[in-house]
Image (cartoon, rainbow, N blue to C red):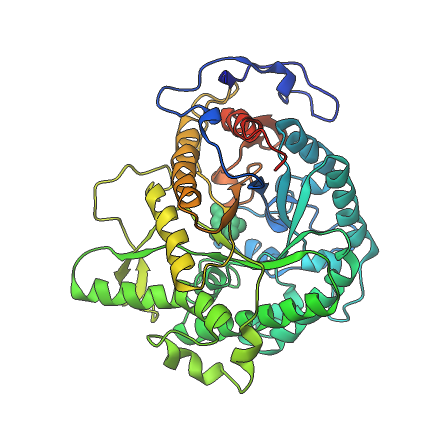
Amino acid sequence: MKRRGLLAGAPVAGLAPGALSPDALIPRDYPAGVPAPGSFRFPPGFAFGVASSAYQIEGATREDGRGLGMWDVFCHTPGRTRGNADIAADHYHRMPEDVALMKAAGIRHYRFSVSWPRLFPDASFTPNPKGFAFYDRLLDELCAAGITPWMTLYHWDLPQWISAEGGWMNRDSASYMAEFAARAGAHFGDRVGHWMVMNEVAVQAILGYGIGVHAPGLVGREKSCAALHHMNLGQGYAIAALRAAGVRGRIGTVGSLEPVRPSSSAPEDVAAAAKFDALWNGAVLDPLFKGRYPALVEADFAPFVRAGDMAAIRQKVDFIGVNYYSRLHIQHTDKFDIGAIFGANPDPVKYRALRWPIEPDGLYEEVKYIHDQYGAPEIVITENGFATTTDPNPGNGLEDDGRLSYLAQNLAFLRKAADEGLNVKGYFVWALMDSFEWSEGTKWHFGLVRIEYPHLARTPRQSYYWYSDLIRAQGIEA
Ligand code: FCB
């Protein structure tokens, strides 16, 4: 098929002035070395989508009855983050335009999260009608656009009232999570085909409670393990609660799952990496699929595990979501009592803007590992993407060769996995649009669509068109 690229064109209905219309596509070569989107063929039914999360795009944090979240507090604590998400991408007000952008690209699957403090602003769990109305409208828009919703229940935005009680270090949080899931399931259960209960529990436990760079900003191995165990427990309870609520959709959960390597061959780095792997990957997957913690870290979790917990955590899931960006290279440190910290890849690799190495073969390795170790569960790549801090040529076609080539390389290895019969069924680009990237604020840009701050105009980058072509080239209704 012919390669197509972008040309600045007239706005179309539903898209903001300045946004490019797919009608404006003209034949054009993509950058040298980037495979034609038509060269990627995946098995019939393979889902291609884009991802987002509530806190990172919605803004409107003090509107329409939304409660306070742990991240609101963290972002407004001086020195913690680059700016705050009070406005973010203003998706709360521009949602129809964002759905129109997906529709225009032919994107048929959308992963997003609901904001717990928007749905249930306080400890009484009294529903906030305007919060529910927002997600009802979103589901209506998606349905009208022919886009399948993939709903994440918990993507890190814990209500502040729970955080004030100790957050995930407090065992009660697991029961709160069950309550949240039961109520969200009862309301949305007839319209959501794919559920993801939690996003990246280990990342929140380690970055938020272990090394303090994410909310709530706490430090310590014990805190981190307590938080992770209670998140695992909350996840188990929530899966059971969704099933009990009779939701129609398939139920899964999402981890940040990457192969771990030591940053050097020094014995202390090798040991730190092994233990970190057990914490980051093993303490997420083993409890879920095998009902136990990995031997290397079992003693760290033992103080928090009560009778019945492991059975509650071990749940049958319909799919496991894998967020993959690169392998993790780990070195020993005395700075944190988890004993490990992210280090460099010792091999000469091409680095990308955020210093995360480009390692697309690691995606294949991870998929194969999960397939082999955990009984061939259905795998969906729920995040994969590339960040820049600047646009090379802002306002002039928004070329993003780095992102294009990153996506193409990762997809090539994913296709290898699919070709070999591994049970991989979907792929979501992180992200539809530039988002509030947690501690890094709006400085990191992951979007297929550029958000121009502060006026927030949406402009598709070239990768948006490339991905659109790739989806259309499948020639199937994904
Ligand atoms: C993942 C998060 C997601 C986003 C990407 C870049 O760890 O799930 O919210 O920030 O990283």
